[in-house]
Structure formats: structure tokens, C-alpha cells
Length: 126
Image: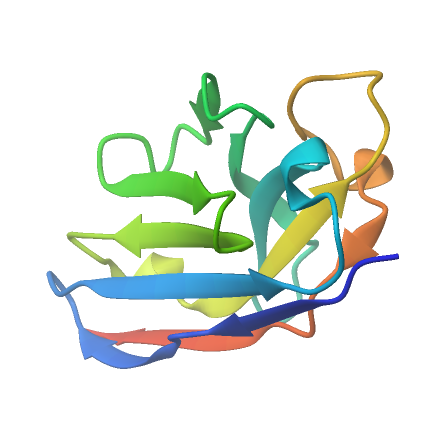
């Protein structure tokens, strides 16, 4: 069992930056693939970025590639999402997610997620 707690959300102007953090409780954080998803009002939760257990592989949604960077620190049980050049369409609740299975090295779908955080609001004003 692992608990995920996000932080770092807030209100920022278009073109600005935010860094989201995800703190994981429990042991064996390094055995979980991690990801960030987001959900805007009235829309489905969508994939943003993912990172493998060993930090060797990362993948991004096309809409954020080149602007967002996912990372993790297994020694600190932390995952991060650095968001640069933010746009109003990035406005959403951002969720941290973990996958404990070894069926895939990364998380690309909500169906793979075993644990969710409570979410943190990111609002980008134009």
C-alpha cells in the first residue's frame, strides 16, 4: 500500500512555470512506475507524463512534450513534474499515480494505475 500526496499547484500566468511534487509513503517506492495525469472540468482524466522505476524511461503526451519534465528521486520517495511555458489549456487538477505491477515499465493509461493522489489544482490565466 502506498499513499500519494501532491503539492505545488496554484495560479500562474500564461508563460509561467510551476513544479508539482508527489510525496509517497510506504516502502518500495522504487518498485512503482509513476505518472502524472490531469483532469479539466467536464473532461476525462488524461495522461500527461510517466517515468519508469529506474528513471531510465520517460514519455509525454504530445500536448506537453518539450514543456513539461517528469522526474523522480527514489531516495526521497518523491516524484516531480516541472511545467514550463504554461498555457491556459493546461488548467486542470493534476494527479500523481503509481503502478505496482511489472506488466509495463511505465504508465500510459488510467487502467494501469493502482494508486492515486488527491490531486492539486493548476490554473493558468491568459
